[in-house]
Length: 405
Image (cartoon, rainbow, N blue to C red; front, side, top):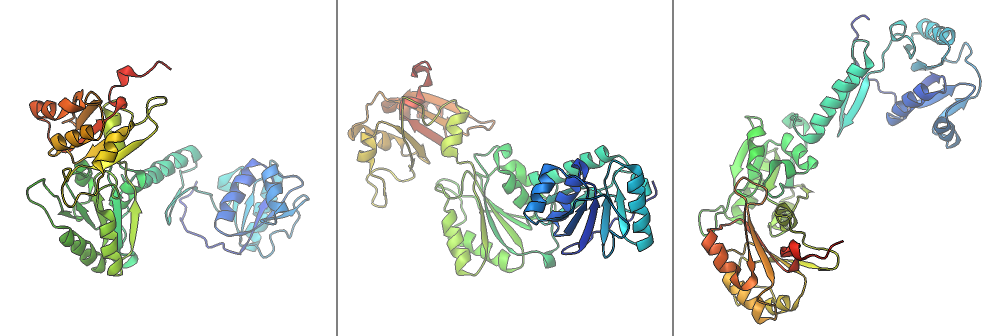
C-alpha cells in the first residue's frame, strides 16, 4: 500500500453513501453518525441495528441493490458488500466522480482507508497500520488508554486552553488510588498546588515545565495559610494557567476544598471538582477493617478530631457519639485521642469497645495498633504512632469477632 496522507474530514450534514448492510457497514455507519454525517445505506437487507436506525430516521435506507448514480452528490462513500464485483463498481463510480471511497474487502483498491479511531475528550486519535488493522487498533488503544489514564501528557497550548482550577482528590496517598480523571487533570496542568497528604509519587511524573507549589501544612509547624493558598489558585488561573489543586483523600472531607471553590468563584475563576477516595474508608480497608458489616453495624460516623472535646470552637456532640453503637471514624485525632476517648466513654460508650489506629494506610510507613477504646491512647503512645492516622472505634475494629456468614 502506498503512503497515505492523513486528513480529518468535516462530514457534518454531508451526504455519505454506504453500500452494503452487514456488520462491516454497521460499524462504519456508527462512526459516520458520530461525526454528524448524512448517511444513506444502499442494500437489499441490513442488520437489525441498521434497520432500527432507519426506522428512527437517523439514516436513510435504500432497500435495493446498488445502481449507477447512487453516489451523485456524495462527499464520501464506503463499499462494504460481500460481492467483490459490486464493491469494484462502487469504487469505479467514485473514482470517476472524484469521491473518496473506502473498499472494505480490498483497502488498496480504494482511494481512502478507514483508520482505527479512538476519542478522548476533544482529541481524536486515528491510526493507519500499513494494511494491518489489528496493529492499528492496538496502537490506537494504547494511545487512548494512556490519555485516559493520564500517563500520556495532554498539554494544551496556553492560547488554546481554558484557564481555571481543577480541585482533585488524590486519595489516601498511594499513587495508584487517584481516579483516572484526576490523572487526566494532572496530565493537562500548567501549575500544581499540592500538599503533603497528596500522592507525592505523582509529582515526579509531571512534565519538567509544570510549576509545583507546595501548600503543605505541618501539625503545629510550618504551613501555608488558607488565604495564601486561595490567592495562589486565583492568581495562577487569572494568569492563563490550568491549575490543579491536588489534595489528599477527598477535597470535601475535612479538606477545606469548598473554601477554595468560594475564593475562586468570588474572583470569577471557573472550578471543576474531581472527587477522591477518602481516607476515612480506604485506610481502614487497608488494615482489613470494614466500616460497616451486616449484622454488626448499620451506620458509621466520620468525625474530625483536630479540636478536643470541650474546645470552644468544637462543633461535635461527643456525648451523642458516645451513645451510638455503630462505627466512629476519627480523622486528625492522634493528639486529642485521650480526651476524645474519655468523652466517648462518659457519653456511654463501653470502655472495652474494640478500637484500632492505622498510620499511613497503604503506604510503606503503614502501622496498626489495636486496643480497647480506654487503652488505645496509651497503646498509640507506646507504639510511637504519629499522624497521619485514622482511628476506628466500634465492633468492626475486631473483625475476628464477626459471626460466620
